[in-house]
Amino acid sequence: MSAALETLLLKSHVWRGDGRAEVAIPSIPTGHAELDELLPGKGWPRGALTELSIPRPGIGEMSLLLPALADLSSREQWIALVAPPHLPYAPALARGRFELSRLIVVRAEDGPDTLWAMEQALASGACAAVIGWPTFLNERALRRLQLAAEKGQAFGAYFSVGHATSSSLASLRLQLFPDGGRLGVRVLKVRGRGIGTTLTLEMGGTSSMRTGFPAPSPVPGPAAAASAA
Image 1 (cartoon, rainbow, N blue to C red):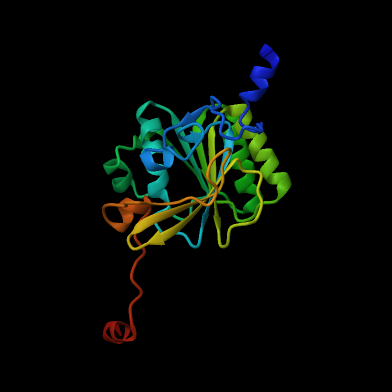
Image 2 (image 1 turned 90 degrees about the horizontal axis):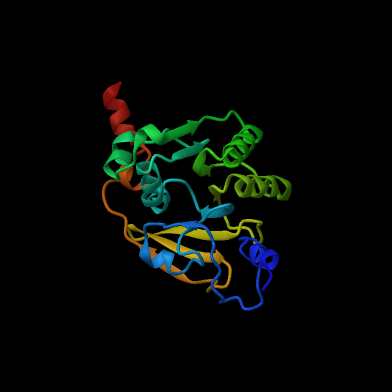
């Protein structure tokens, strides 16, 4: 095999006919052994996009990412969260061994600002991981984010809320769902592996520890409101 062809095959966006062939894909261990076994690089792909589809925020979705992000932060790598639904809950992150001094939180005003910030962070080469919560995405935006991730060799992930789309430029697509206090993960797209495979991950601790964000405040009922009046 020529050096040029070997270099091309190492690119994460190149598909091979022998889909089960192992290709050295730069990756970051997820911290979940069962999930690593399903991924070609045994971890989150670097230099590529990952889509995480959720029915709604707050199902424990950040518990899927926290082990890998904490490991990166402990190695003095920068982590960027772009337009998260809430400010991260520092005590929960600290309990998960996340080095808070390596965290960057970007508060974007609107959808275009979110995409711009994600693209800049991914392409910069300064961030090992960039996690975004965009309000909308189209093929052009996804392509720009993919190119930015390739340039910066970062792990790029974004959350999509609602029903999973039938197609996406993301190299890895996972559908997340609550499963009796645990987190269900269904593989929608992955290179050379079992699409449709479902696994369940344990989530320990309080709601804040599982999500990385503050627990929502309870809404007072009519009796409580009348008492306060």
